[in-house]
Length: 68
Image (cartoon, rainbow, N blue to C red; front, side, top):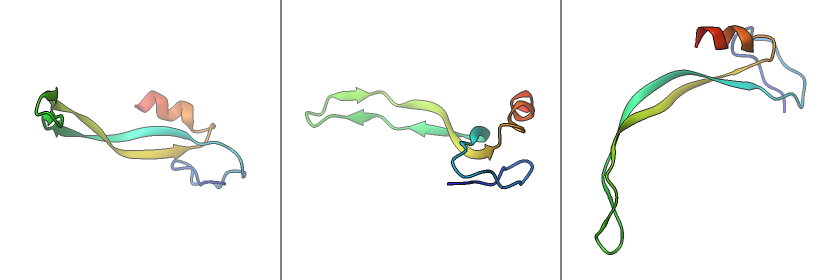
């Protein structure tokens, strides 16, 4: 499977693996969870989730890491 780089927009060779770079995140609140017996499994809380990811070729990856 080939892909197109999210930075230089060049098509990559089939079989090459993209580097994934997180370009955006958003706040997320997690609710408290209970088990079947009614006991608390997890208190929940606040955190972050990934909103955007770019597939980047190995040539563009070093520049993206410096930005992120």
